[in-house]
Image (cartoon, rainbow, N blue to C red; front, side, top):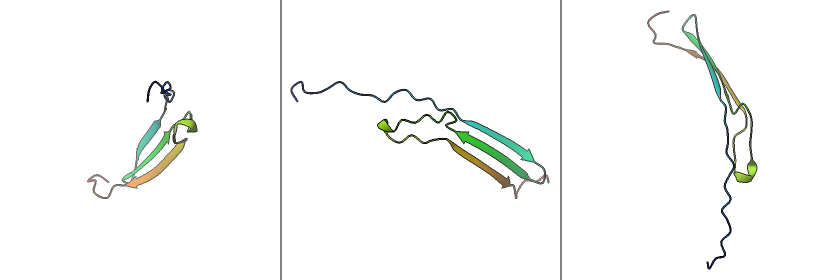
Length: 67
């Protein structure tokens, strides 16, 4: 292009902090909570960065031998 290029622009550094907690409960139950992107730092100028997300759930184990 004959020296018509400009300097490249790069996205800034990004820090993502996640946490997860898991607990085995009586009666073959397990519970969990997961938080992603705790700091919730987003910059839409450089594309989509997911915001803070919270996941929680309970699992029942049908095949575990010990009740």
